[in-house]
Length: 78
Image 1 (cartoon, rainbow, N blue to C red):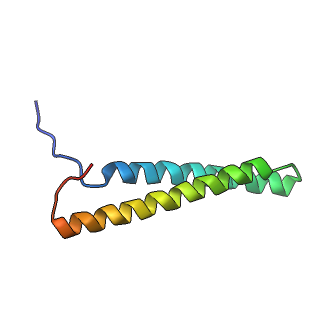
Image 2 (image 1 turned 180 degrees about the horizontal axis):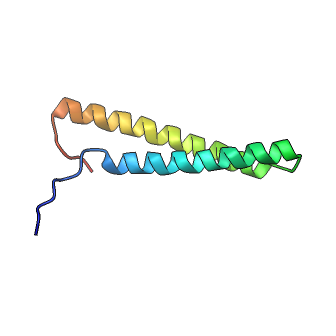
């Protein structure tokens, strides 16, 4: 059995950021299409705002974690 290297610090945060960004992108496209076609888009726009807020929180959290890893010199922090 091959030994696996431990994941980098913040690997899970990077995955969550990618997922949230993908969802935000999809919601953005849906919201724009609904607005251009004249259909109600308020609910989709609220979901978009929530996903962008979540994305911002995840990015700030990742920056803080990476700063802490750089200070302590730790190789893994979960």
